[in-house]
Length: 297
Length: 259
Image (cartoon, rainbow over all chains, first blue to last red; front, side, top):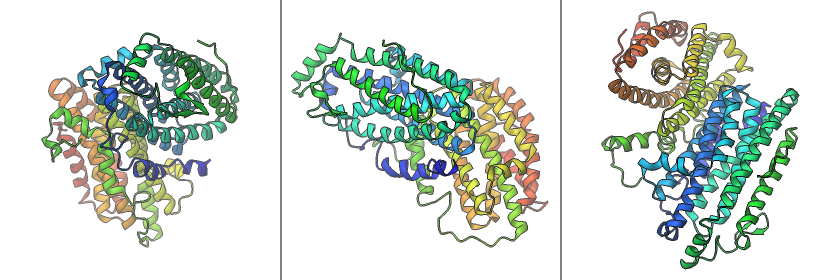
């Protein structure tokens, strides 16, 4: 165990993250890059970007509370030290996504009210289930909920957003590149550390599986809310076409072999959900947890 | 960030708070003294020959520092959950990784000195007074008493560590000295945060002072007793020991707390 945990030391983190892929960035991106004019000049597109970014802030605030809260429940010091680096990673994510809200024109004194107004209630419920485990100092459930379920979801969502942003919004795409690299490390820790703990505590499995099922339900409900909103869809499409954009996403953007530019929102929702669930099944299987299928919202 | 004044102390107070509590500020600060270091020291720094007695004393001292840093890691991570706003949460997240780093470099130093099972050695050699301090700190965090917990963590514990580490660094072997000097730089930032956070709260809510005075009266004896456990081992003569205690007391008194 100690050999694998040495890969998650603070020394390793310092060399790979702040002194590695974040070097020279400001709030996760090239200091000179800006949100695209197309986005800033169209209220509908800007509103949509704010709404999406609010969900990222909500998710990262939950991750910050969970990773810091789990430190005091750690069964060993190397895990506590890894979670210390994760705590700062998550705080950085909160900071850069909050900064994006400000870049998108949200006023500082309106920040909390904007977040409250746009936070998806299903995502809030998803977070509450995890934080309840953290409050009880349940390390095994907490790490599965945080580092496999939450981070697994975030990883895939960031990848999708990265693909859709690369051509039209290089600033946001670069911000996401750093967070994806962080999430990959967090998911890896969860898989490596929890597998042995589940083996030592097989009685925990039903409780962990129940939590996974509940969190998965609320995750899918969040996706449904995000992709099935019809009120602004036509207006957004019109605004993009007027601005001369190629379509809802950049030309040629692909996600797991699918051309995103040719997909309608329902197809994208299904693709995202299927991709995350496939990842869940694989990763949970590796740690000895049987994936539980929730009802489809 | 391109339009900031050259000196951050010239900034608008609100902007100053946001700036010094950010990941960006933390990274710029630590980059200056951690770049090129491995486990807190220059990789090719030559180890000074310590005899067996000196090595044994140093191991005991480092084990006690590790108890303090464990308390600081657990305390600061717990404080993230009860911090009153985003900026303080962000600052505390940087402190969490600082404290985790301190624990890591101390454990690594213990391993350099031949300790095979650092966690067991820390449990064996840790001062009971420090262990008691850790318990009390975590009780305050668990009770979600923000002012009392931040006072115990970022003023009392950090001031205690700052005073001892600074004095120890003066006479330490080169590797230990470099490790301690890096930690001290972090502690200075943590104490500054604690003083700033509490200073503003004491101005707006003077009744908090009485409660913090009680916390101090409870924790001071534990701090001073734990000094007794390490002072001889870091080479302080009997005459020098009161100055160490005074150095700690001065830091706490900057907030207006007199014994």
